[in-house]
Image (tube, rainbow, N blue to C red):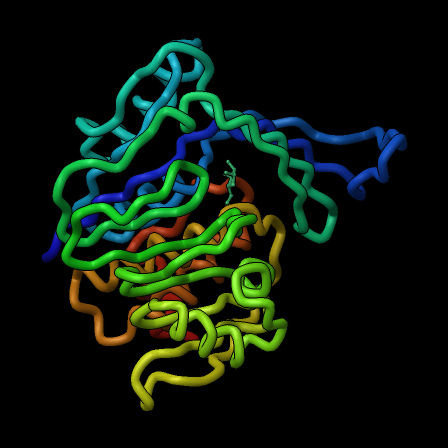
Amino acid sequence: MRTLSVLGSVNIDLVLATKRIPDVGETVGGGKFQRLFGGKGANQAVAAAALGARVRFFGCVGDDEYGPFARENLCERGIDVRGLKTVEGATGVALILLDAQGRNSIALAPGANAHFRPAGTHDIAVMQLETHYERPRAKTLILNPAPAPARKFSLRGVDFVIPNQIEAEQLTGCKDPRKAVQALERMGAGRAIVTLGARGVWCGGEVHERGARPAFRVRAVDTVGAGDCFVGAFAAALAKGHPDPVLFAQAAAALQVTRRGAQNVPSLAEVEGFLRKHA
Ligand code: RIB
């Protein structure tokens, strides 16, 4: 099995589940509050580890009260955290509003994540854009370009790019996922996979891999971290030589949205059982 290095963000998610997300200047009462572990990098590492991958994590937490908890959480999930540094200041925080349909809006304070710089040599590296991006030395690079960059961005040296539809549109200017996949591959990515939520994914790559794949039909209660679960599962499947990493990742993400919390990820046995039943 190949080793995965996830290089990226660690956040504490302050989640408020509410009937609906308030407009600017409006107050909506009756919500339920939870403090959870999050951060796109940490979420992807946790998903990959739960699905049986050997995972190393590289990132930064703060020397505040949250930092040790975030570190311990990754350790408890079986992740090698020797690459996780503690820096002066606050750990990253995400304020998340979740509505009754499981949709979310997120505001971020990067805190310690802003100090992280990729270093070292990796086999399969997984990155997102909540931390500073530069191509790490890696045999294979998977990039989840989230949040989408505001400036012009090169995908040279990226083997797999996995944005959602909004990020794909922001990167390429193409709303149509088929065109976005082609544009992402023209921008330098080896293979582009655009996730479309309940509408499935649009895949690029070799001719036989190209095209739309429908989503598994499930009842979503929380979509926070669904993309992270997809990316972590895809990376785990790739590391283990799975014949269809996209299908495996779709099954993992389908299970994840039926639970609350970005790191409430399915186990390998659950994903395999789901695939036996539904694929
Ligand atoms: O992708 C979901 C994640 O985005 C949350 O866990 C939050 O921390 C933000 O980084």
